[in-house]
Length: 277
Image (spheres, rainbow, N blue to C red):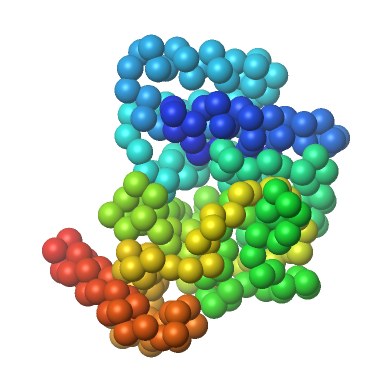
């Protein structure tokens, strides 16, 4: 199994404290499984920074088959695509640098994905105080275009068939890009459009801090969502998707939220025109 971690030079200490340390402990619980770490460190802009990264990660590279990718630039989708490019195992677990993984999580995941014919699976996260990170279902189900809208990429395990499909993250979306959200939903929607299948499994794999405003959306987030929905559904059906999201997510159905969604839709349509897509 490949473990793909995205981080930045300024977050190396957080990576060591949270994600990497807990993943190393989780691997100790697994038997007869080969793990390969794929670690992308962005904003590494000097030889001194590169030496520091290699020094910090040396205890991982000495113990495991590890590939460290140093990138001067930033962008979450860019980082995820670098991981996809290096993905060679049967499965890829998409990881983040601030998640503490449960000690028994990898073993449970491996048992599930190895016995499944699905191309991707999504799992559950919980907050540091033990509560569910989201309002998850209590039962497994097959994903569709509606359910993938609630998935975060760090909840996902991908099968090698995903790489074979040629689908990658849209670099115009995601943290550090023109539209800083929606990249995981676009990626999964593209997989479904290609005929690949996924399922949700109600198993908690790790702890992730939840922002105080996680259940509400800012004006910029509505703009971003409008662009992402247009990327997924196209000119014709995106209008209905925009209205549906407004009815579901807008606080007291504020007109400004609908305007922001429509603004994002216009932005993306203009972008397509400029790019001659």
